[in-house]
Image (tube, rainbow, N blue to C red; front, top):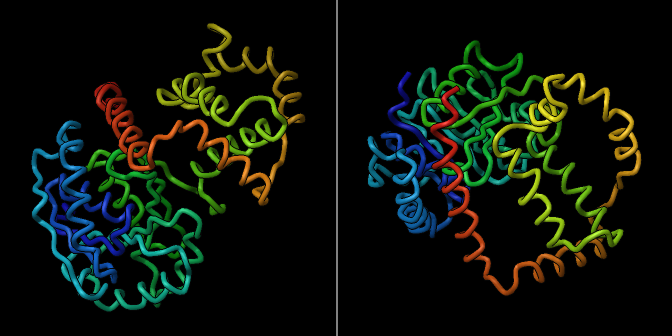
Length: 310
């Protein structure tokens, strides 16, 4: 299915970013968001994102004008064969939206939730028949960061998760399949684990918040942008591969893991992080930091995209 007409429910940062990407791929997008500012903010977001999407070669078939805005979620999904749901991550809100749209869905339509914290099983409680629902969790911002975590389960319709993954692949995303429900899925848990140790190191005075961030982006972050940690380590011991690496560094890593901390985001830790982040920012505004982040991600995507032929 081509999914020529799509819908986005919720037009915050995630929903507007999805909308920009869907538009760039040549599809029309129906939007529902109860905010009175939703239309103006979404159009502004798409306008800002469009030059970047063009730079990445993603707008050849699209137009930013194929947007429509609707007064209800049910109206927005009428005629759409792919629906990306991005409403606030509170189960009562999710369940209410799903109950509203279920009778209005086009037969065979897919509904993918961007939920980062809620599980698919929790969200299925809002359906009479949850067959159309899958997890389609992106990384922010979805129009720039390729990852989407896709999951179906025993209550998902046959082939629905595969079809959702195929759609995402067709618009330039990189999908992984979640095989077992865990809070936070995969990528959020990975970054939570790294951040936990970063916080521990800062709490212990090993290095400043800014220098710990610098150690990541100037060190392993560069390698991890090319390939994951297991693949990187498989090259770390020469032609012996991962087996040789593990044989050599088994005790080293076990010792590091035993020594790693378990900090919590209590008031004192949060204050330390906020102060450290402000110092590292050097007076740069939030808007300037966002623009810098997106410019660097765009530059990396321009270089890496042609190399990811697989």
